[in-house]
Amino acid sequence: MAALRYLVPALAVAGRAIAQSSCSNAATTTLQSAGDASALAACSTFSGSIAIATGATDQMALDGIRTITGSLTADNATQLTGLSGSSLEIIADSFSLSSLTVLTTLNFPRLIEVGTMDWTALPALQGLSFTTGVQQAGSVSIQNTQLNTLDGINLQKVDQMTIANNPYLNVINMQLGNITQSLIIEANGRNVSATFPNLEWAYNMTFRNVSQISIPSLASINGSMGFYNNFFTSIAGPNLTTVGGSLSFVSNEAMTNLSFPELTTVGGGLQVANNTALQSVDGFGALKTVGGALDFNGNFSSVSLPAISDIRGAFNLQSTSDISSSCNHFQPLSGSNNVIKGTYTCSGGESNPGGTGTLSPGTNSGSGSSASSSAKSSANGVYISGATGLMGVVAAIFGML
Image 1 (spheres, one colour):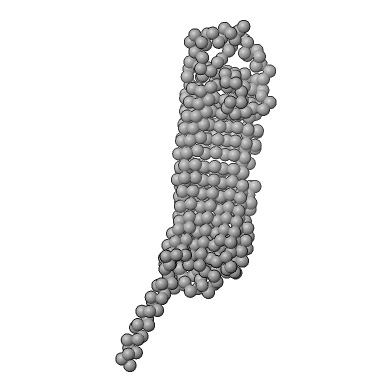
Image 2 (cartoon, rainbow, N blue to C red):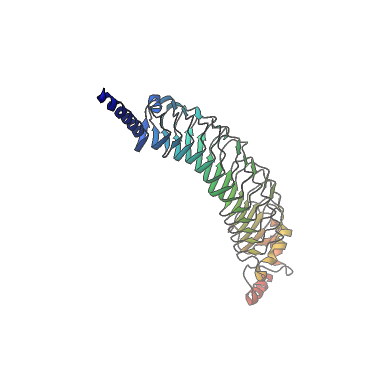
């Protein structure tokens, strides 16, 4: 009896040691079956990383675990139909899912934090069961899925986010306050809307193939922002004041209006190009400074920049329409006025309007039909960008011969 009295506590200690050892692994623990996952149910915290084996089938439930200090990974498990964790709240490193061809269910009702989220090639996944919702993540990449909503992912801030090639995704609505590195949204559902009501600042933002964009609170872009091949008719940044890098609007064929009334400074280039429905570029009423080139080309008939005082790169305006009044307004801002520091080009009536460098510097013709008379008229003279003083007079004399 005395021996038994000491044996029972010893067995209990040994049992706890075995349980603790199963909850910690310096390497990665690979789960082959649902039974392997159930064996971790006693682990409130799993210290290490967990991987789902490629041969795993059906459902895999990580019930009982609240925190994974490493990663949770499933790659090329082509027979895995569901992955869940009823108690899981934190994945400290990456939550990585790739090439899971029959995965239809992701059920993590208490998950609130991941280090990174990297999901790609999940062709059967249409929705998420994330009841509480993921609120913290360093980076998020969701590509090539059938997700029709991102409900359950509602971050307050993120370093990097890429949402791309999800053809059934038509709503992106997040409460993000800032984006410290980059946001890329492209090639999702044809009618996708991207709404960020609380976003105040970001580093880089790129939008492609989006039907509606709402950024009402955005005040500052530290890097660059671009809108390419989108489907919206209007784009507005009512509170945006500064862009540290470049700002681009390219090939948004349905766009008829752009409005950035508080924007004063673009540190890099400002490009408005090939937006075929845009007839007037008048949405930059407060813009004073462009640190790089100003490059506008398309079908517009008028350009208005009433506050502009400093363009440090080239100035290029080209349109299929007659833009005589715009050219007559901007030409005096080059030369001795020194608002436009780089080469000056302004030409209307172009059959194929192009970007900076596609016409000879110094061109100033509001319409193609009047190019010759504008160049030879003694009233208008000949303008050669950068020619001042004696050289300017000589250039004008030769222009009248």
